[in-house]
Image 1 (cartoon, rainbow, N blue to C red):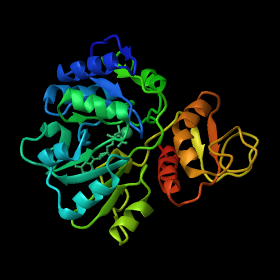
Image 2 (image 1 turned 120 degrees about the vertical axis):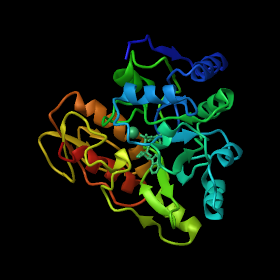
Image 3 (image 1 turned 90 degrees about the vertical axis):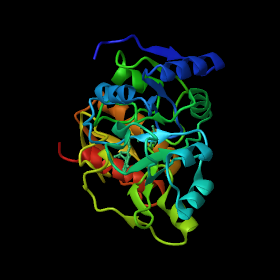
Length: 310
Ligand code: TXA
Ligand code: MG
């Protein structure tokens, strides 16, 4: 890919208008969501979508999430069984992606990787919503990082990975949730495809039933590849004492602490930025135990992938 000069756009009316115009032209624009920064392209433009894979150096068999500004737009792209509509009404906008049967011709086949389903989400971030409204077309957006690397939760993270590969980044400051969206499928019953920013427990409470979970390592999601979200350093989990670099949780001595108060929401928001920060100074990052509940499940999922053999 020819290098381009990446424009940093301010979170102003003008910045959003410029970002929307670039997307309409088929250019790549990174933008903030409440989960992580996305690398956006017009989902109806095959060439624009192809350039996402090129910029990320991503294996092209991985399907992408499409972002829409409202449920009405989602209904034009996918079929909603009633359960899915109820869940969308309860949790959108928010950190939840639904995988649903795609309507013919709704988006480029590159977005779905030829699957009969489309992953779709309505982000809660006001800048994302305004950008999606102005772009006035479905926007495909994976996390805005080179394939396999840690997802970006600030504009600087995006620049560090993709400078010169994308037309622009809309700078919205740090992402509030800090973990990618939870992915839910409905074939045949509600199935957790990726733990994420919306806790499994919240979905189960709304459904009144436990979710099915997919066996790990079925080849569908990068979230399903063993090594993913990986820093350069080796990552060791469930460590409480070390002379080396320790990423802590709760009251303890550590190099950096995800949440000294033991708050999982705060820990999720800090996770990727702290992994990046520690990655610059050490060969081994030790990580304290994180409770396997609520957002802790998604945090542990990302940590296990960061620790997986490469
Ligand atoms: O929070 C998020 O979800 C962020 C922001 C930018 O929205 N996006 C994100 O996208 O995490 P990405 O591309 O890094 O992850 C998309 C996940 C992948 O694991 C992909 O395989 C899965 O969604 N996926 C996409 N389409 C699918 C489909 N039709 N069936 C099953 N999984 C699908
Ligand atoms: Mg990703």
